[in-house]
Amino acid sequence: MVRAPRALNLAPVAVLLAHGAALAGALTPNEPLRAPNGDPVCAIYFFPHWWEPWKTSDETVLRDLARLKAMGINTLLVDHEWSQAIDGNWGLLDRGHRLARQAGLQILPWLSLKTWSDMGCDPGRIGLAREWFGANLTQGVTQDGKPSSLLVYDEETVAAGAAYAEQYVRRYFDEGALARFRWRGTTRPCVALTVELGWDGASFDGRTNGLFRDWLRRRYVDEVSRLNRAWGTSYGAFADIDPRDTMVFDRPAHIEGRAAHPQAVEDHVEFCSQMVNRGLLAMKDRLRAKMPDLLIASELPYPVGSRHPHAVAYRIGCNANPSTAYHADVLFLRMTGPMDDVERQTLASHIRATGQKVVLCYRTYSDWGRPPAEGGADPTVVSELYGFEPARFAHGIGFYSWNEMVDVHLSAPGQGSPINEMTARPPVSDRMQAQAESILRAYRGVYGR
Image 1 (cartoon, rainbow, N blue to C red):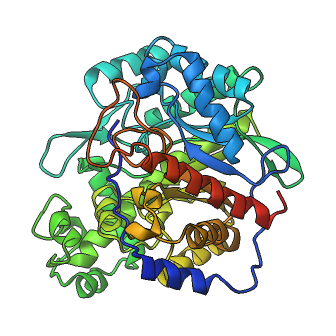
Image 2 (image 1 turned 180 degrees about the horizontal axis):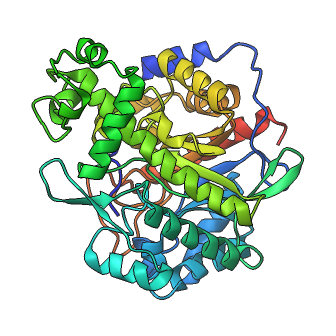
C-alpha cells in the first residue's frame, strides 16, 4: 500500500512548551465520540495482516492487542479494502475480526484507499470487480494522457463501492468486531468508505473536463471576465478552458509556490475534491437506504488547514481539500504534531460547518522515546499537550500507528519486518509506547475514565 508520506515532526522542545502553556488554562472539553461502553474513542492504526503480523501467529497478534487494550485503546483502524478481501477470499479480514473480537476491541475499517483507487489500479482488478459486483469501472486519464484512477463520481464506481461496503457490513455486523459508536441516544455501526481522501491523478478526460467547465460557469456566475481577473488569464469563453494545459494548470509549480496561475490550479483542486465527495456521498446514500443506522467515517492524512510542506503537496497533488470529507459523519485526521493557531481555527470552522465528530490521530514520532537529557521533551508536557488538545478541539484521539513498519510506529519490528531510518527499536520503542499510554491516560482522565 502506498501511504501519504511521513510528516516530519517540526516541533522542538521550546515549541512544545509554548503549545502546552496555551492549553494550560481551565479545560472545557467537548463531548467526545464514545464507544458502546461509554468510553471516549481511543483509536490506533493497526495491521493484523500487514508486514510483520502477516507472518506471525494468532498468539503474537493477540499479545499486541492485549497491550493496546491495556494502554486504553478501544478502536482499531484497519485497512480492509476490497483489494485485501480478494486475497484469500475474505480470509485475512476474517482473521482480523476474529482476533479483535477475542481481544475485546472493535474495528473501524478503511474500505478503500484514495477513494477506490485500489479497485481500479489495473485491468485485472477492473475485470475482477466486474465479476464481484457487475460494475463496468472506468479509469480516468492523467494530464499527459496516461491511465489514471477510477472516475470517482461515476455511477459504476458508486455501485461497486456501495456493494462492497454492504457486503462487508453484513458479513461482520453480528459475528465480527465492527465498530459501533454512541450517536444521538443510540449505538450505531460505522465504516469508513476510504482512507487517505483524495483523487490521486484525478482525470482529464472529456467528460470530466466538461463537468469542470460547467462548475466554473457556476462559480464565476457565467462571466469569463471574472474568471480571467481571478486567474490572470485571457480566455474568450469557458469552452476555451482546457485543464490539460500545463502552462495554466501547473500543479508541481503550485506545490512549490511558483505557479503562474495559482487560482486556476486551486479551482481545479477544489472541483476534483467536490467530485470525490459527490461519489462518496452517493455511496453513503445507497447504503443508508438499506441500513439507515450506518455511520460513515472518512480520513484525511493531514490536518485541515495545515501548511506543513507534506500536507500542501498532498492536498494539491491528490486533490484533497476538506470538501472531500463533507459526506462523513466522523472524520479522522492524521496529525503532524500539535496544531498551531491557524489549524485550530480552521478545524473549528470545519466542525461548525459540517457538524462532524473529529478524531485527531497523532503520528508516533521517535523523539517521544528520547529522554530530556538527550534533547527530548518532558514526558509530562507531551502527555498533557497531546492528551488535552483533542478534548478541547475535537472529539476523539488516535495514533498512527502501532505496526506499519515502513512508517511511524510504536512497536518494535519482528523477524522479517522491513527496516529503515524511521524504525524504532527498544529502548526507544518501549519509551514511545509508555509516552502514548501516558497521553491516553491524560485524555481519558478529562472524562473521568
